[in-house]
Amino acid sequence: MVVIAIVALATAGATLALRDSSATQLEREALRLAALLESARAQSRTSGMPVVWRLSPQGFEFLGVKPRQDARDSLDGPRSWLDPATRAQITRPAGAQTLVLGPEPLIAAQRLVLLQGERQLTLATDGLSPFAVVASP
Image (cartoon, rainbow, N blue to C red; front, side, top):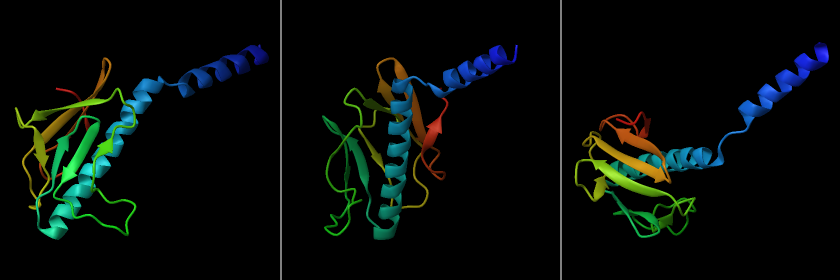
């Protein structure tokens, strides 16, 4: 009985530890993008210049960021998605092609959806709080 209980617990632990890799990839992509969007908001506030996020054919880019030669973490230049199957769609403001990330501390409420196949995650801000993964509407 003890051996069967140990095997059952080990199986349950292994099942919980193994997650669908596509879900994990999409979560990682969403967390990465949320951090980059917040970094761009901070740069916009410190420089006093608006920073705009827009989609590009292979990923996305930030416009209005000053290039920094000495920094590895500069937002300047195009960025690709971690997974080439990732797509994004701005859903708020409706019909928008870009997200404006400052320089004011309070920006308009914004929302975008990241898609990989049939999976999707929504990133949003109410304009004051940071971008975060939220429940899909």
